[in-house]
Image (tube, rainbow, N blue to C red; front, side):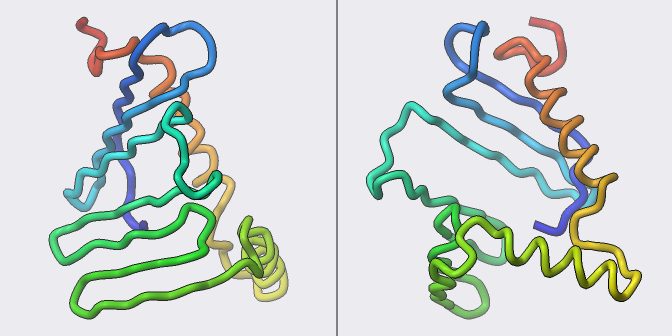
Length: 137
């Protein structure tokens, strides 16, 4: 979302062995914001595998389908977009950005350093015991 994630805490209900089915992640951003991510494979999808996501901030909110099929934004203005099926996995956009970076010498939108940071955050979440954000359960 354009902010710099500085810390994360994750919670997962149920048994800690095996693949997680549900997770709650709380993140802190350098810009002062706090964000949450709730995800569950246990909750059935009403739309045959398509899932709605929501971002909420002090100036508005955005609701979107996780694959990018639809976006509804309520902020200073109301906007409804249907990007469609053309690049449902986002691969075309990623490759176009990568090729542009190679051609122009500019930084791609996603760098190796950013990917490593994201992976480190995910590994830190998975290493925490459930319900123990600071190791002091």
